[in-house]
Length: 101
Image (cartoon, rainbow, N blue to C red; front, side, top):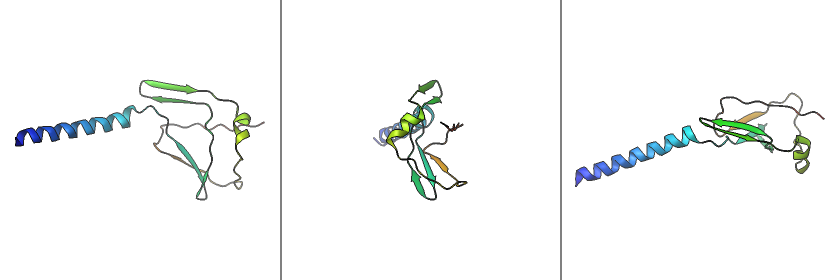
């Protein structure tokens, strides 16, 4: 009886570790992003992006930035201020593009 309980507990631990490894290494969702300026969380708009995670790649296209921004009031920050990018998971690489009319 004691041996069966130990085997059940060991199996449960192995399953839990396997689930965690799968979640960490095979989750193909793009990390969420918060942009912070002087302890203020700024609203962000998700534009087009590409995201790769192991053997899965996701490409998403959206309208041009002027069209996306019609629904949002732009945040105002001081010239030269620092913006902090906080991801729920750190990506290996990011690319930022500025849109100029």
